[in-house]
Length: 349
Image (cartoon, rainbow, N blue to C red; front, side):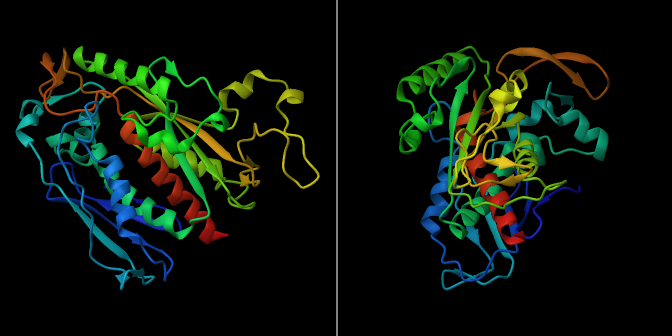
């Protein structure tokens, strides 16, 4: 299986399955001499881990990171950083009922067709549990460029949206509620809706918005390696992501050029920022902001039709521990992949 590595100079290779012994990764290209805050790394893992609230999967994992190499006396040495995250709360029997069937909108069928074999326990390599390794790499990347501020938050759940621009939000409130929405009134509506959806045995999607501040001019390349193109690839590699837009996004397609152009100030900043902080694929020093759309989780606790490996259509109901809405736990993953992209471009620059 190819495609387990992301990055050009700062590179993360992940390994492991949802119900294997451990997840893990190798970070290559990390600059030497970075004094790591291990508590901060573990805090990022706590934000992503399962079982953290009543509106996420109740799988209980501490997601404690064990570093194996590349760090000496608390500082990075410049050599590959190896780490593992042990799996301690697998319930593989929860998935025995899908051993010979393919769940709708999962990777089950295409994995088996492509590789001739699949790990049906929690989806194996296709499980969102793989993203734990990305969060480790992203936490280290954040510490390598502390001047950059990366703030992601849940901006919608179903048809419930924050109706304020990000400039009017207090990002320090994002972690004050289980939904990770910095607008308290909206967060309460979102949480109530997710609980209602869970009672129905169903799931719901949503969006995560990310704002990056203090980015210098010059990150990104003007042709194939545009900054927004790499951010898009990074976000679309996250499980359940169905869409990515930055700046004015799809709304910009409705506008006239006279409305959409960001006019300059004498110092090179712009009066508006519909470009989303990126022009010609290169950061322009303004805030970078983008939105990521997540589909409803495919496993639902309702009966639905499935395909078995003999070509028969059968009826089956989801079992096990699953998120009714993935977006609250996706927030630190979006931030992690953002940090990985930015540090890679910093090193290339």
